[in-house]
Length: 173
Image (cartoon, rainbow, N blue to C red; front, side):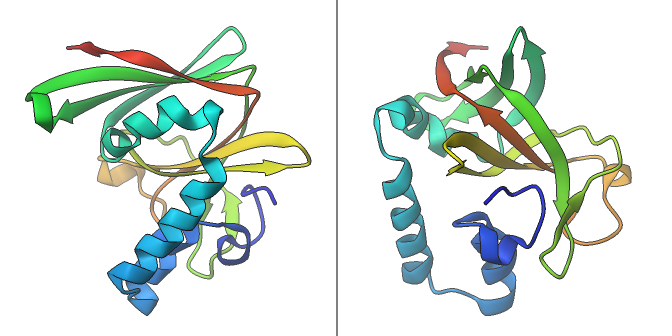
């Protein structure tokens, strides 16, 4: 089930909890952790081994998104606490297609984002398969208050169809 239309409450395995349960239903920490563990079991394999190593650094890292040949690259800068330094890394989606930019309105319906938004920070993501194709939907945060969407959740959602994910090594900034 693609997260490019429909309702996020019924289609999403993990993003729905970031949107709704944290505000509406106030999930207990143990329940929320169980949802995360169940989701991670679905993506723990060789393909995601490198991704899982850097996943904890992605949330709130600053990002730049660009296309290169048939790849979509998300460059991210993050603070590595255990080493007290700023690092840069890249998530490279190989043989990738940008499917759509969306937003989630208050009812949970996913609708098209018809406005140019500049994502500034990485929020949350969900990896999934649909018709034997691999997809990732990523929620981004914006810093410019003028870029907010007037209805629904105020963060843009990007869906990418890809063949393989590659995590490029971190570099000191």
